[in-house]
Image (tube, rainbow, N blue to C red; front, side, top):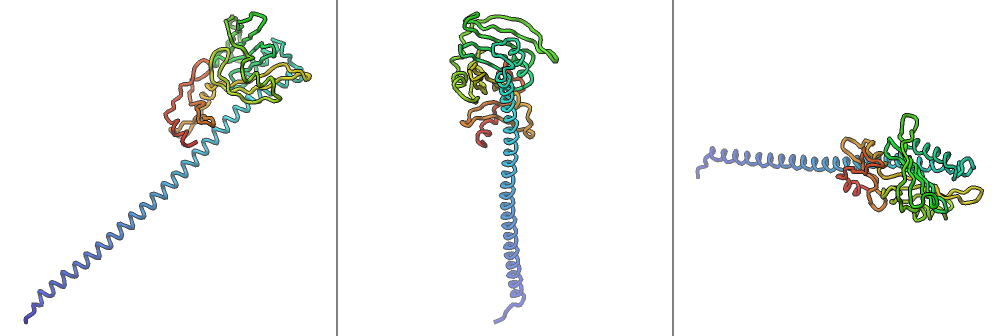
Length: 285
């Protein structure tokens, strides 16, 4: 039988090409698989690194905000301690209206985040200094004997380095300090503590109060409270820089919103901060 050498060689050549193509395909597949696997590993590593970085940044932001809030809390404590010391040392009498007004106003002006300095007597009388934004203050007194059922209000304009009397008026009021938790608890307590406060002589304003008893010569004179309205916390948050697009919130242990950033919030203007990122903040907390 005759064999065609050319045909045989062509078959061998075709087989060789097929083997080469198969080997090339296997090599290419191996390269693609290796590249894909490397990309997947790189992506997972990058994602893990990004998550870690984001977590670290978030922790740093939370720590910074917590530190600033702690400073605000310390300011309230310091103001309470300063006034309490004046009472305890008998430098200031709780019934000395002129000196009391001066001391309360000085603390209110020196601490930017404090909204109220208030005092309640065991007989139910009440006196307070209260900010009305940054340009006005009011001093108020509620007596059970003098103008009973009314709140005396003296308003002052804040001028550079001083205050100027603006007007005096009387308004009907049903506010009774004896019904307030911070007063009832403080009157029976040994040391000051923190309270959540909603009701004020001016209406409902969510706040926190550092309140405690004042004793002079072992006789209880009443309860002193330093109060921070949440609107002041909202303004404080608006001054923080949280990355390029971040936002800081203050949330209590139950997840309830305390404050969202609002540069215009104060004792006259309720907070209207943007809470778009609040769900994310709650999730990360």
